[in-house]
Image 1 (tube, rainbow, N blue to C red):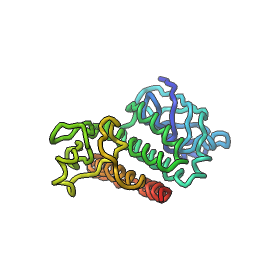
Image 2 (cartoon, rainbow, N blue to C red; image 1 turned 180 degrees about the vertical axis):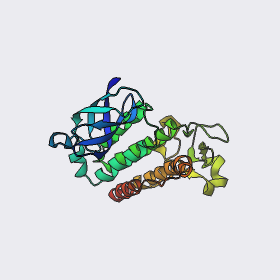
Image 3 (cartoon, helix red, strand yellow; image 1 turned 120 degrees about the vertical axis):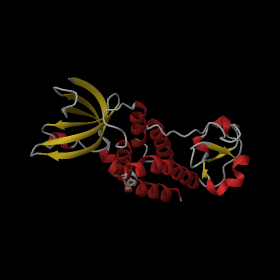
Image 4 (tube, helix red, strand yellow; image 1 turned 180 degrees about the horizontal axis):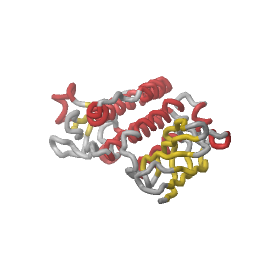
Length: 247
């Protein structure tokens, strides 16, 4: 069996004296593992770095086998990422998020979104918004998507400012006012522009904080707690660096 695809490297670990096990998020075949023979050679060492984009060919006798990878570098961005304040924590956060997906389950949209984020860690506010939207898309792909299109109580599409922590549905200003302390804030950048009727108060950093809190609540509820795993510490480090840069 054989296929060829585009991918972004999520992890690499040593295998024997000369080879490596590569974990890669591909566009059409999802998150896959494979053996790279000679993966510890000087030629491949620079290519097989987390965050790099590659062209990858997988071969195996049977589909359920680990198989082998042949790789060619496409966008070797890791060196520039490591020079950025957000780079290390950013690429590790994206990798941790993509590991929530089942192996070999295609999610082309998340693959494309990951590529975009990896190329935008030089701009903290943009990176923060992209990360929050990525986390929302991840929840949706896992079957836990939020409904931010209309108010859960009234059906209105205007003045949506909160989200119910239980249902994951948007709540309007008037309907949610009596329950404000129990609701999660909904930043404007997650809403369709046509639905925005009121100006969002606060700094750009505070808008991001709302988004990070919102996405984390549902990641924790639907992913971390049920699976008995800890949230990635890299995400906390990334958020701290993003918000620090916004001051």
